[in-house]
Amino acid sequence: MASEPAHAKTLIVDTNSYSGNFERELFAYATGQQGCRGRADDLAASVVGDVRHLRWWGANVARRPNKHGNLQPVAIHPTPGWFNNGMGGHYRDLPVNYGAALADAVSSMRKSHEKQTAMIKDRLNREDFEDGPAGWTREACLRQLESNDAAVRTVERVGRRYDAYLSVAIYVKEFPPANVLEEFTSRVRYFARHHESLCRFTGQGEIGITGFRLLATPQSASPSPA
View 1 (cartoon, one colour):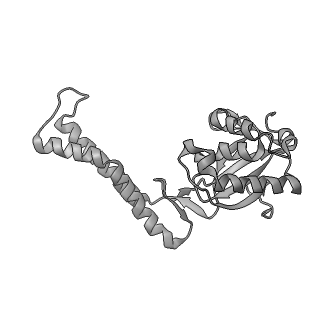
View 2: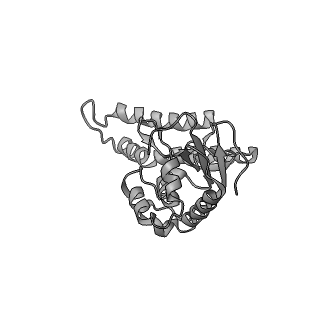
View 3: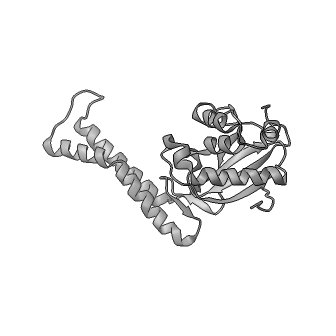
């Protein structure tokens, strides 16, 4: 597959799960194309004889650089109408969900420090301290407790909503014609229903597919093909 042409377009699959757990495998299973390495390429090789429009994908899949500068045919993509609370929780972007999302984020941040905080408090209670600049001195214990508390207070104060990456972006030179698109959506839905058996190593169960989009630019979209 060649590098991205200037007119490359994007085929988006929207889901209800974090797409970083399966975006490469979905691409491989739906198109039969390699280019992601590892287990995704193994999956592509195992289904290559099942993809009726394999040649179309081979001629039309494009690549774009990821954040590391590596050219990839697929990536995770922000999902309209959803947000992430910054601690891995995904929610519909509705005001009624903002309070719960913030409370969950605060709880998750506090829980992430729970074991360390308990250990430090135990040291303080027993006055069990270490020597040296890298040890758990009394000052280091108190400093870390304050740092943990500050992290929780920051989440409470900021209450930021982040992009939710529940979508998979597949880069193409041209949008698929109707017959290719029909097979693609069918294979994606099969992959989503049977993901647990197709990709046991990801730990991801059944995936909900919420829609398909064709993007000519990051800002514009055509009507959904399904």
